[in-house]
Image (cartoon, rainbow, N blue to C red; front, side, top):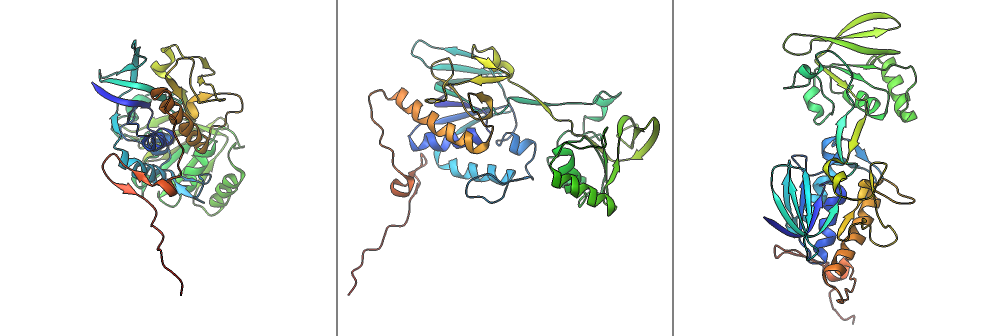
Length: 352
């Protein structure tokens, strides 16, 4: 049985930052995540894409932000149960909880913070014959670009008309030997500068654009060798090493949806006027997984919600004990591992 103060479900940026805020209050955290590594969407979907709205970072790669968050919380020695999903929950008479994963791992916590982003993600897949065969064992179908170097010197066909399809077509044009972008419409629904950039790369011969068209089949015995494309009623065949359909993701709350929480449009309703607690005392929801009037699904908003959640948990576990907020610039940061971070002390010296 794993025991902790706060059990955080979701190792995305909001969940990771919650560890830091909890640590300042001397609260221990343990994190459950279905992915095999921390970072959530940032690590799984777009580790190499830049983020521009993190305070203090004019630009930071998603993967680097995860690395920095992991370094920030290292002092507080969080535990991790990775590659497992939270399945069942039991509330005990003392108000604490036991959460069991799909692998049978049990966690005993005094409070729970659901920070599961938009839930578990499943890619929207095209309906194509033999798709399941080619999406296994690196046979040519990928739904995420985890490591762009995988495609260095390879022929790539990307399908889709949104930001992901545009952005990865642009990025891989400098990595792959050839990039073909297929979209069923002539119009794209991505950022205007991305559309303009694809147009520019098309004119330079770095991206081949096929519209309005769609991929309708594959060729290749052991792995993909080419894709069949239908365009204006005609058919053409394009050689490729990889086919990357980027049609978006379908988020699902999974087993958490059966925990008796109040759900609205696949998100968990919380009390944003106070502490982001759900309708169940002791269970909080922070980050993209929650909803309330005026909700914005931004990482920086998740950081704010994590901070207030931790303050609420502290008050819940220490009734009647007043916590005096101290700025880290003044108090420093004492880790559970015995380390301490603090500003350099001012030099006391007289002026003659």
